[in-house]
Image (cartoon, rainbow, N blue to C red; front, top):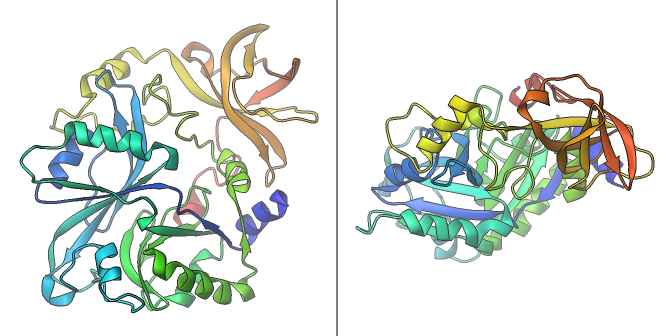
Length: 376
């Protein structure tokens, strides 16, 4: 079943429910400055998204979120409420104009963040710790007040184009763009991003609109070969991209360089963001570990986490997560090893259920290594 779900995403288009993610709106005149302080990334321009590492004071990873900057249309062109939830609830059961930004004047910006669902309270406490006391920032944990659906695969653009009047062409809606748009008759926030590593989109809507959006996607997706996919398939898909996840590869014991997230850290930005000095020290020293991907010559079981990683006959590291990558037809593992060994071809091995199995370092993703499909 998982193999067929994976196949649908890689060959056609898949649909997944993502309401369980943690979700936050950050608003107010001090929102951009606050996020610039609490997040290590560069804060995106209106209409753009980015991966947003969050660091502890010592420079270790405290969070892994996506951050979207949404233009707020001028009051004359949208409902009085500034946020999607209030606008959706203003007239229950009736779609409202949430102010798509194209060609309209804007009255500012607001930010939307999404991350691991089991970290919502953890993230909330961290945000509250650094929130300014002058009331210039409002941080709203959304929980199930906002629902989400993800579509991914080579036909995902065709599916989205069939349910909206917006321009979602390659040039009209580029990778990591975000926009308010109607999907069917429902106001949504749509970002061009997907944890599958494929062409894909995340659609966020108020709960009362989710069934309508879902039904429209199912109807329009039928001739495209749409199939539902779940978390096990998602795990198989992200392993092909060497992508880590919060709580496994990304934890407060690893630094961004060690975890391979250094390209998302704006070391040179002027503001003294939380963890900056620690991150700079890690960059200078190189840290001690590196997150690596492996293909394992597994027999009848795949890794799940904490299995020993062997190099030249010695245990040097540990597996953080893994599984079977159905599209690549390979058993894969992610894990940490000392930086001095990370670039070595081998010999590598990973112990699975007491058996030491040969493994091969996978330096590039086994799927879409140059990201041409994801960005195309």
